Image 1 (cartoon, rainbow, N blue to C red):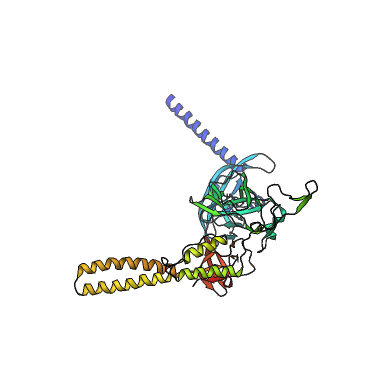
Image 2: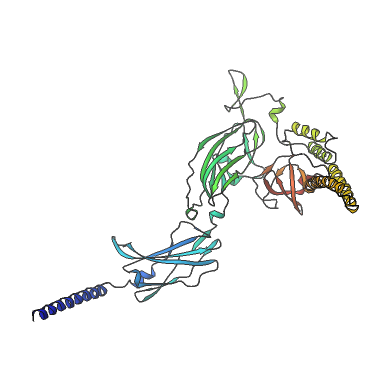
Length: 467
């Protein structure tokens, strides 16, 4: 009897415990009401990144208070073109209340991928929350090109108002020998800056005044679109003339991990002699700027510029043509051309390919080709092999010279390059008069050329083609 009563007491205790658990859960469901319609319609899926990029997973999320993850079902509707749904996630978080304090809730996160840049309007996301159906809108977003596929960019900012780039024209800025041209170079789409290199300009004082700590995100999905300063320079031209902003190269690491050397944009400055003031004590004129010095007007070097006369350009063109149509060993055309370039303070260009040399090499090639064929026909193989060695030698060198001759070059008479074949386009690139340029193609009145490592469009009338 005692064993039976013990079993009965254990059974009653278990039954009471089950009833208590059921009552607690029922009371929880009774007093935990689902979110209101007004609250649910006020929610929005918002992007978690400051900037969205192509070819990467971009997260959108929304927090819903007083709801557990198991009471929410997500349904993604049709997406715009070039947008794909990647995955979703539900997690329990603490949600801030408008009246203050925190409460438990659920965070929904969706990941989407964009294939192209542009502005996207994504259809609302369907949610079922504790039996209620809601459509939660998604904020419109602008998607930019992924920095992993973008070459780092540079920008020049001048400190003085007179050198405002918004007022820059094809003629360039007007400056004087009194001016200190201070400017800062900034970069974007770069993970780090490795080195800064510049050419020291002639007749100028050029120095670095400040180097900045270039801070950029290591993650390409969180990179800022803003330019960040790299280095500041102070440039002081000492002589008048047409000057170009000195060559400056920035070696940086892009977001795809490769090292890239970028050339800073160059701007034209038309420098005039600074205003002189009278010194009554010394009874002479002195220069108002502290670093320069005054020279007499009869000094021809003082008025040196990069502008040459048409006769000088014509003579340079004729020397190039002469060099092309003479044999290198039996002519001084190359020496005469280099000497004239030195007189004009032009950098010495490469040796012109000789048309006569090409014809001689090609002639020998034909002769040894015929001799080789004849020897093989007469079965004189040893002599045929001997001639084939010369055939190979003249074939290689005639081919190399033929490739050089086929490239069309010309003498540029001066001016600027344009990024597209239009006249009213602002250009920051200027080619020095007398430079040898490579003509890639001709379209109407325009030619697409290469000068050193710079490419652009110029008017065909400004180029004398070397023939």
